[in-house]
Image (cartoon, rainbow, N blue to C red; front, top):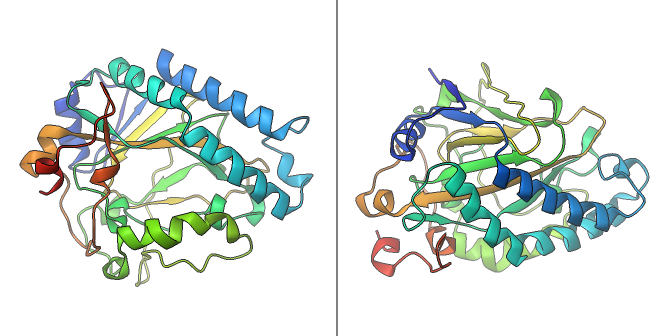
Amino acid sequence: MTSVFANSTLTDDARRELLFRGEIFSYAASPATTELIGFARDLIEEAFGRLDPETAQFEMEVEEFATLLAELKPRFIHHPRCKELLPKIFADFGMSPEDTYFDVPRLRTSTSDHYLDSGISYAYHAHRDCWYSAPFSQVNWWIPVYEVVPENVMAFHPRYFDRPVANGSARYDYAEWNRVGRPTAAEHVHDDTREQPRPEQVLDLQPEIRIVPEPGGVVMFSGAQLHSTVPNTSGRTRFSIDFRTVHLDDVRSGRGAPNVDAACRGTTLGDFMRSTDLERIPEIARAL
């Protein structure tokens, strides 16, 4: 059974222990997450100009929309303001700044009615991040930028947290993805031919859990949790931010969620930065 803890006051250590067992946490917007989505909105609304970003898909050719996102998303990802705001978020959530490492926050979109489901606005099939070389100590954060509804959020599939799923992760190599897959995202407008780990069996995805936070609200879950993009039928493009954290003690001790079915090569640990000074994870820990 998977439970959702709302606005929990547990310590970060206790929270991570439960996340690694498949529990999910949801929080109201904090001062720092409100700052983060405010910054994201500024960039989004500047990029879309006179158009409402949530309905612009109905006024733009899909190729034009994809080109706009291909410029907007890297601008957000690599903006130094994001690296200033994330440590403030971690402080809001009682995390140790010296031991918390994060990867860059990513601006995600989910368009309505299958307008753009591939490439730069990929609609994720059911998957675990651990199929994509994520460490089993990884905690995922998901934050909506604007209002969301059940028809445009994520779905969690807790039936499979500790149950293996036949999948294509054995064909996934993180170094190769960075070399070939990631740089070509914007080229995949009408379909996506990049090799990505998928389930290779029929899944029973019910029961599923959908969480609908307020703008700036946070959903935290293990990178080993099976989850997917809900088919967006809301009539509005969903904008959200996600990023990932690891605690150095977990990395060094090998503590994390169980590996029930991942067989990928490589690790994303080299992407994580310490929240105090943006230093990378020490080689001794990254090699574990």
